[in-house]
Length: 321
Image 1 (cartoon, rainbow, N blue to C red):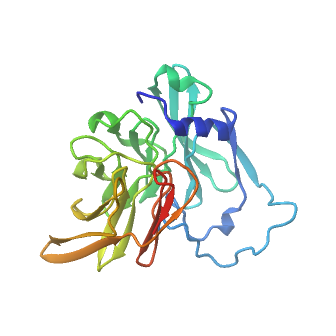
Image 2 (spheres, helix red, strand yellow):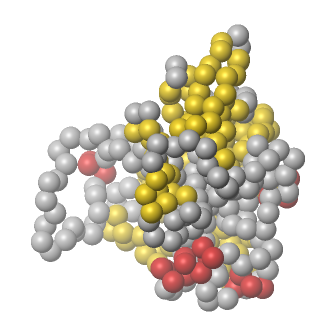
């Protein structure tokens, strides 16, 4: 990273101290479906289990166990009764990036994978130092974790051994800012919003080898993680950059539709694309706007409900649907 970033200051203010504790409030027998990635199985923050507690005890939930961790915004993910999360130990001039695996009950550590990275001097100040923001994703015995500086690791989930690693910031000439978008898996592809040069705004890698499969968009990254939806009879990859909200073909990165989010916003933008002999017509329409409080551009994901998508475009201070 080449320059300070506002989110780093926010992170330090929220954590307050360089080491926090992870507290889990459920037992393993309460786990039904896995929660293997950012916002759950379908990246929609929906929990479909039965037997949900309708009212919490007045004294609060009972803490079953605690485990010490270091700095980070990364959410824990749960697969097969194991909890995975990433953090960072900051000890100038080194930042030790870590990925942890713990038993969901009783929280006993199973393994930790760690590697050291360097950081500029400004990062080690009290208001800038922080850990990773991207939530790892687990699929078929492998976990993929992206750190704050753009290094991506693929580990086996049994022993935490390294399968492959890539320095995305260097390879794709990413800007000197933090990387906080959570990786997405679509079939055999690991998809990332990077904001790199050479048309590497969005990049898809082979999740087994780390090999690049496609790249798309010459646009700057935000903190908004990509999602995949099915609409118009096709699967669509929805990405929100600093310049647009775009719908891409997740198989090859071709643009179905791109709607710019800077300058004068048209009421409707759309296009027709032909992929594999099939003509697909997709449009993005801005139906309404509502003024809200200030925030950071792209600090949240795109929410989809039916045929409607919602995002916060805070450079306008508006909610757009």
